[in-house]
Image 1 (cartoon, one colour):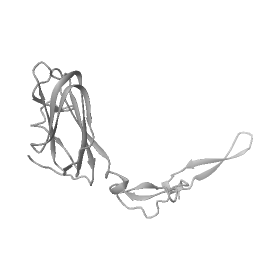
Image 2: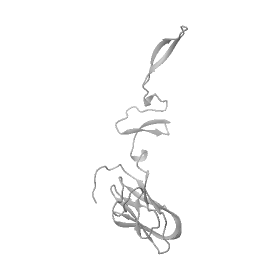
Image 3: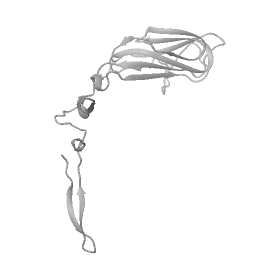
Image 4: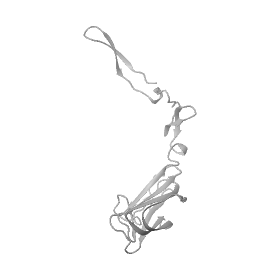
Length: 190
């Protein structure tokens, strides 16, 4: 446990003061923290039964597992029959796809644009059509009951197909992938 080091000092009138000069607190100093036995890579996780934080792992129910990763795709202006770009990128997602770093499931997607349009949203995984949805005269749409398995290093791309005279403007598609494993680090080639 970290302990403060005390130094005695005296004021001008002779009154003695205790001054704390150094203090190196540790997590175990907190009343609701029990991190005895914590090892490299573990984090404090809350145990509602004991009411204390205890050593836990980042994966499993305590971390990445179950979290949702979002992959955003967008295009500026009127868009017709075009691959969307990953948000912030300058090339189409068929050549520069979003790369997923952990195993998981595509659980849904959302779509917005600045004007109502007749559009088919096509979502590809590793170059193959994974799912699609045709929308009639819609500006916004959310699909939330998908369950498409995906593995670490899978590549996601989005294509919008539109009817002439009814193209979306400034479309954005966000894919939602629920994670189910630890990150895979390294390089991969298409």
